[in-house]
Amino acid sequence: MTYIILGIVVVLAIVIISAGVKVVPQSETRVVERLGRFHSVLAPGLNFIIPFVDKPKTIYTRRVDSSGGRYYVRNVATTVIDLREQVYDFPSQQVITRDNVTTEINALLYFQITDPKKAVYEIENLPNAIEKLTQTSLRNVIGELELDETLTSRDTINTKLQAILDDATNKWGVKVNRVELQDITPPESVRVAMEKQMQAERNRRAEILNAEGEKQSLILRSEGEKASRINEAEAHKQSQILRAQGEAEAIILNAQAEADAIRRVAEAVVSGRTDPASYMLAMKYIETLSQMTSGKDNKTVFVPYEASSVISSLGSIRTLFEK
View 1 (tube, one colour):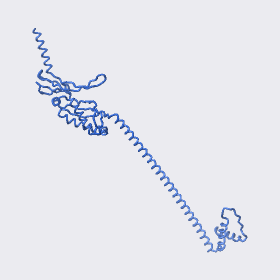
View 2 (cartoon, helix red, strand yellow):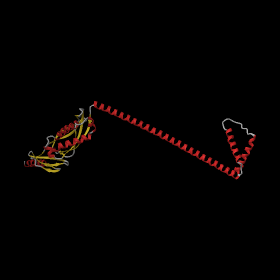
View 3 (cartoon, one colour):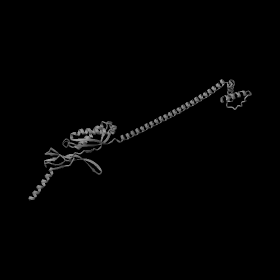
View 4 (cartoon, helix red, strand yellow):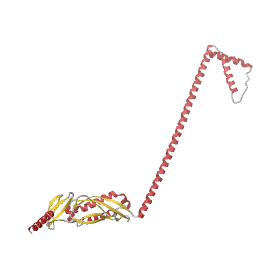
């Protein structure tokens, strides 16, 4: 009988000691109540409480379960408070934009419990409260925007929601780190209209690009023709200049040769080596002869007998130039 009583005492002692010893993992905590009142927040590691007097507070948390390939979320009661950053994936909800378009939106919420005491005593069901607050805040933010702004302003919506939720959950001991919109799904009719609008916009941009290309092509072609004409005109100009310079030089050379000839004849006349009358008569005869033989038709020229004196004058001129 004594051994039985002793065994019962030992068992009771083990039960009492185990009930009084609480080992809290890292990044977790417990809120302990003593006789129904808040007593302490257990730190990670080994903790001792008074059995049957101290009791961890029961709270609610979200748990994601799967069944038949489908996921569903449910709230469960527990005494464990997770201090790590948590993510809530809210189901899609319908919101109405400022231009009265009903859109389905689902969001992700990243938050962290910073004050376990407030998270337990300031709100009855923290996960449910955060979900409802996120849904109502999302409706308010989207209701201030039109559909086009909603589709193109995700970062703005995320920032605004994060600020609203963080301010509202501060008194619950919760820090909202960020909010992310996953999907924004407008109605089918609106999506079809948007696709047609985008296609029309793409066609308009393509036509504008084609017109710009044709414009640039015409400009480049006209500039090329302009440059070609300028080059041709410049080449013609240079050719005319060179031809004029050649003719001028030829005229100068002819004039110099004629002046030299006249100078030599004058010297010969002055020195008495030739007869001026014979020279003049010979020159006139040569000019007349050249005029008589000019032209396209073939001509036969008869030199009169009296021209022998002129020919002798030419011989005198030849003798003059040889000397």
